Image (tube, rainbow, N blue to C red; front, top):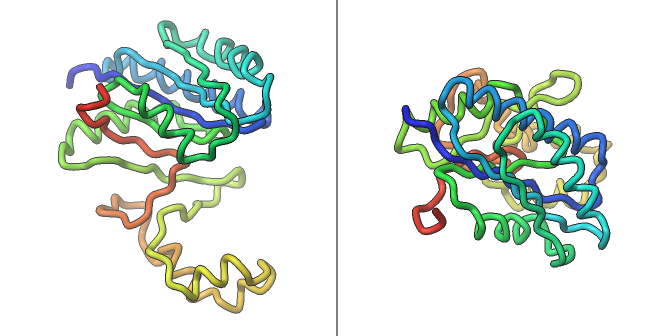
Length: 208
């Protein structure tokens, strides 16, 4: 496969600096690994600052320090628009995206060093796939059930209004919504609702 170009977008709002630094460092390591395997070419990182005024210099400093370990990464901090929310923040980044692929990444997610290389190889081998999400695990190694079914009104009510300590009473409904019966150790396609914490997708031609 030819080396692809990639845009990585991260929306922040007064982030935990330690966690963000780890996210950026893991992204830099994954970029470097993919370049070593010749699957990744030019790379841009767009940091969208939804936080209080004055955080942009800190975000740039953290990013520049992290991406010093992956040469040639173009960095841009998008700021000055205020807290416009997660979706609109990513839309600001998508409007500036120019790569073959686009990665939506949360500011507290650490990716495996092989993540970008594996994603690019998968999407190259499966041209009919529009996007992919990886297996995600918490700090304790437990699988996070981030791909969901369409919620029923009952599930929406439980998640919105029932205290968490009572969720055990509705375990069957919640487990069905979280698709806990699915074997996520194997590839699953298509998915219903994919998490935006790490969403790797092809860029529409109009944005390239």
